[in-house]
Image 1 (tube, rainbow, N blue to C red):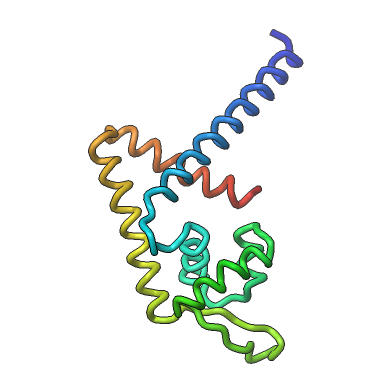
Image 2: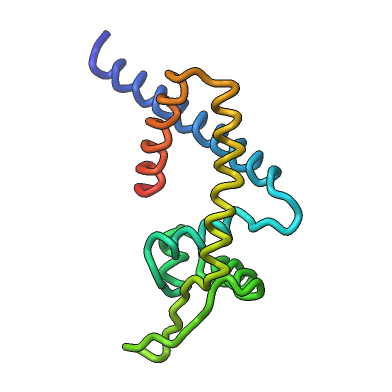
Length: 152
């Protein structure tokens, strides 16, 4: 097999993997969304809260950039969180025109309980239906998916 054929086969294999990832991650996302009960936080809301928890106070634009969504979409997500008193806006001490978002105590509690409920359910399924080797492979894959998401 010559170098051109190897390159073509690799390109095709990489594309097939990209397609499989897109489909499987999409299915996982849909299933976790379906698992949320009425009144639970949505995946975008949990994600925004998690970012504020990990990174500290930020603007809506900074959160949107980190989540790779439009500021308008993040604004709608933040509005829902504000209605639930999970985040609060305060003027930036350096630039009063900017508003900085931070978690309220209720927001901190929501992110902790929201993470736990879904993580507990996933952990239960993993424990019941996957071998130790498969769980280790999924852990490695999760780290790679995080890296892939950062690069997109």
